[in-house]
Amino acid sequence: MKYDFTTIMERRGRDAMAVDLPGTSSGNGFFSGGKIREGFDVIPMWVADMNFPTAPEIPRAIAARLQHPAYGYFTPRKEYYDAIISWHQRRYGITGLEKEQIGYVNGVLGGVVSALNVLCSHGDCVVLQSPTYIGFTHAIEDNGWKIVLNPMIQDEDGVWRIDYPDLEEKLIRHHIHAAVFCSPHNPSGRVWERWEIEKLMELYRKYEVYVVSDEIWADLVMPGQRHIPTQSVSEDAKMRTAALYAPSKTFNLAGLVGSYQVIYSPYLRQRIKKEEAMTHFNEMNVLSMYALIGAYSGEAEEWLDELRQVLDGNLTYAVDVIRQKFRGVKVTKPQGTYMLFLDCTEWCAEHECSIEELHKAGIEVGVIWQDGRPFHGDCHIRMNLALPRARVEEAFDRLERYVFCGKEKSRGEV
Image (cartoon, rainbow, N blue to C red; front, side, top):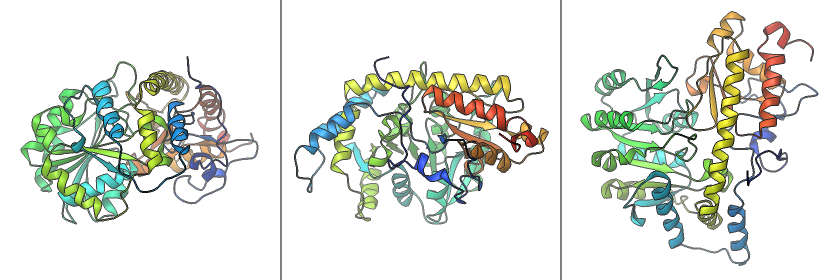
């Protein structure tokens, strides 16, 4: 490969929550009070950022801008909008996207809240498929709306599917007119097929439901998969959806802050932009602008395609190990994202172990993974596989030796 995805990058003390936060018992719910045993280093497999250096074109673009020593007020450059329009055409097959239909937002969750402030009254119900991204839960509940879950079901091959009859029944019963849709889906890793989105959006058309579509994972689909933008499946879907994107997941730029929305409906766009402007905080950072321009260049696209191969290899390796060695743990290989969502129900029942105890056992040997309960997974673990292969293999070796080996042994001496 042209790019280096094998070197283990030292992130400690470099403003990385992934490795700096869990060094001690945090008591914040993420780590079940677990404390890493002596002799184990941190393998960060929780928060959804990557343990790879970003594409070289991005720091190069930032560094070039830094050579001019003035960083005052500014407006987004034409190159910013051109980069987004070109990226959507090359990666998603979208034509006709115009500058006026693109708007900056500080983050996807802020964009979700601003859109829902236009689409909902406080106390209204908002529907979303579960398991769910924990950020949606906080964004919706913290702002006074009620969540109605549409639990997904797994077919005979373990593929996560939308339960359309359940969704329709809940749209009617709760008088729902706003939905949050995650595409690709976090934490299940589903990359939705066109017919699935068409069927979903037809239901939303029937019951006058407006949609906020989080498509931040759009670029991280595995080889052989293709992201279908929600707005592309019909003219009606195009006009009833506010879609949210960012280069942050794709290129590991979360710390720079900078997302954007695509809204085709002039009415929705004007109202949502007004809502965002009321905070007086929704302003772009000049370096974030140059980061996006660098990220959406042709050279960085080559880096992305290599990254997708690396992630696909890591996911395949992990799923194979789990199926072969962790009897009682169910997992489906994600079609997109770099997250695994492990169903540990059978394993925990067989070993008389709670999901909290299992989660803590991993933490104790340095495997920093996430309790799946905040994601509406009753007995689940969420794992980040965006690490060099050597780190992934070390993590699964520890899990095999010290964790998925029964409660007594996992708590014994190392």
